[in-house]
Length: 432
Ligand code: ADP
Image (cartoon, protein in one colour):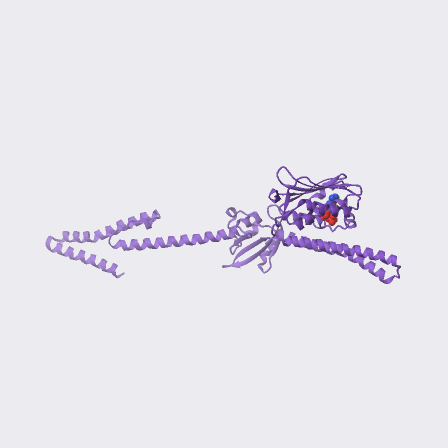
């Protein structure tokens, strides 16, 4: 400030002194002329520099402006530094803003920012998909004009956001269940967080069904067992009658044991998320074991055939593979009427995949059941399954074991003619 005043005073003094000197020697006109000339030079200098500054400001390139000399040099230099710093700050803020947007976009949840009038300030693409919004089109629109569900409109209007809101049948295919909650932030603004809980709800329903099914499966043998116990306790029975009741009780206890064993097997398989091990499984040995068990189960009433068409072995977990194979063989025996035939075979197909298949001449399965057979407790013929000691969990176990070995379970069946259950293993699981 002082330097500006000093400069100004210097120029005035210079102009005055020069004008006076010239006036003394050459007269009034020359004196005034020289005074005006001395005042006009710095004015012109300032005007030229202001004009240049204006040009660079209009081109938004103040920081590239060449610096003049003299008084304006410092002004321009400071101005350039200020503009450069401001631009750098704006760039940093823009980068941070972009990072926030990227983070919000990466979120698996829908995010909507609302201003104090519930107008959409911003939303991520997940929220766009959940609610059929398009940010470019719907920015600054009131959200209750766009999401027309009465429960949502009420939720917003009530302004008490302690509890989340469940919205069902949402999304492009109206098949999503969304959990939404508003959180206040800033000045009367709100952040809507929306979580897709469709899978959670399905898992919950499955868990509930499963518990109900297990309880139902257990209740039947327990009730029967208690009935027999009461009979044995209250009646004076002869030894042969009592033995008969004990035998019946044993079969119910056996049924519960099988159920618990299968449930434990399933639980263990589900708990183990790693793929199955890759030990060499001698298929010939497995086939011999299967044959022994099958003969014992069939008790000579079926025609049984076990064949190894190729010598290659399988890489996997022997206990699991044996359990899956024997489930398929035992199903074939249990569901095929007497005199029927059952063939179990192992071969490598043209693509180098290993195929274990069990073909029976049993009752076959109608096509509408095929996709549901591996569901826990899904049975076509309940009484046949129970009579033959089935738990309804066999194929669910097979499916799990197949998954753990990257194998596919394929089922072909013609009602009245028979069925083929096949486990197809990838060639990486075949040893030479
Ligand atoms: P279960 O213990 O009842 O046999 P599974 O899970 O092993 O349970 O099989 C599910 C259902 O699939 C069975 O209840 C039965 O109705 C049907 N099923 C399985 N294998 C055969 C087969 N070889 N022939 C006909 N039906 C079969």
